[in-house]
Length: 320
Image (cartoon, rainbow, N blue to C red):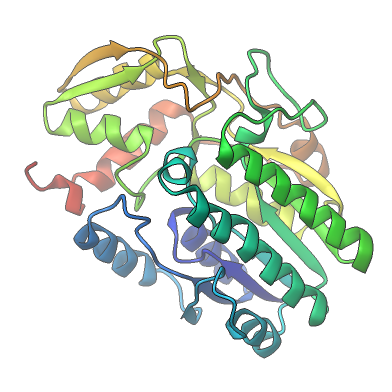
């Protein structure tokens, strides 16, 4: 099957491309390969180089928000049966730093891709959303529960879901929406919570916990990728929305303590909750389990170990 993966040079995206190629599918990649102003260029270059060695798909460096014919040309040229749309600002912090740019990438870029998909008769559009669309939730939450996003990132992710559904309504194109949570693992950038904790511990620094009782449904990257690929390829997932997580939340304090235990160094300082982020618990994954047999296998202890083993030989292992 021909599959176009936007954001296919990113952390989760390159693993999706790798997994699809392993299954025998033909992929093409659209990615702007930006650092979003938050990652040192030498780190981003090293990460892109390492990621690129893991798959053979052609990569086109295209800015989705650029109003040119590049996106349309790519969809027409590769004629994918399925588009997996992963290109996005990575999280709330980056959107808050430049909301206008965030809107261009997350909204204008999505519209351009949907228009190209409509024009060239893409059969199915896979939209990677986020658990942030739910907003605050302290009880385990399912896909049919209300969405009350807090912050521009979650709001735009939810608006993206509505746009995808509207295009499907008007064109007959199938869609599948996927909501991951707190994905971590090898070849990730340094500016996410698990990365920050492990790298700080490796450097013998203080791990700053923003909200002792705040929780996240931490998901190892291989489990997230298995869910994305499973939902993308299954005949049972058209016009459906899925939580793709480990479905076992832990507090930020527990994650920091585990990072110190894994590395054997570091100290902890508890700070106030970050108001930019909602309070969250676990996401229910019953629907994914029933529809396409989704079964996450990596618990947080093993996930931290695997990530730490990679970090020890990565660019992040250099002295601070």
